[in-house]
Length: 164
Image 1: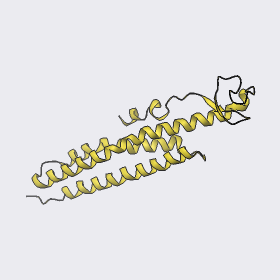
Image 2: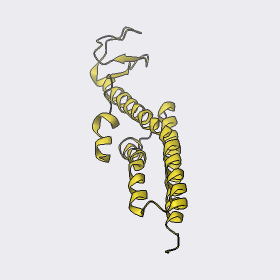
Image 3: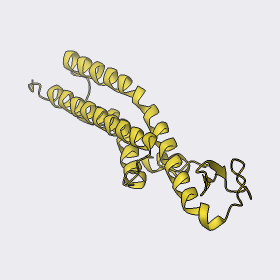
Image 4: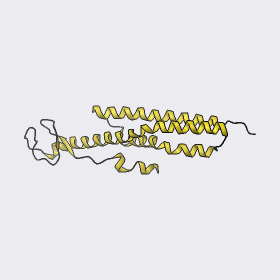
């Protein structure tokens, strides 16, 4: 199931190919024969490297933004964890396997963030937007990790009841 979440379309969305003109540095379509800004004839050898960089960074940013949409689920996971804990402590109803089973699905954001860093997080770029989403994903990872640790503590506490 987690592998399905990390499929190619989610981590590598389709991006229109474009690159910077080697003369005026404006972003132009790879299909253009002449730069619409400065009029110079575009040579594919000159624009190819910048085009590849543009596509890779845009894919990384788009993918990171899609992954960050899971951050709203933190509140749902927190509510489910606390409610499960309170019900379990008050009435001793949930076995350990149930607590773990209801927590596993919430590992998906951590898995996706890890896959993003594996695929896109190692690049040395000074692109401000790329650096921003990289920091935001780091924050998101820590948020989910802390919440999983909190959930683990709640599960551990709920399992420490005396045997009657």
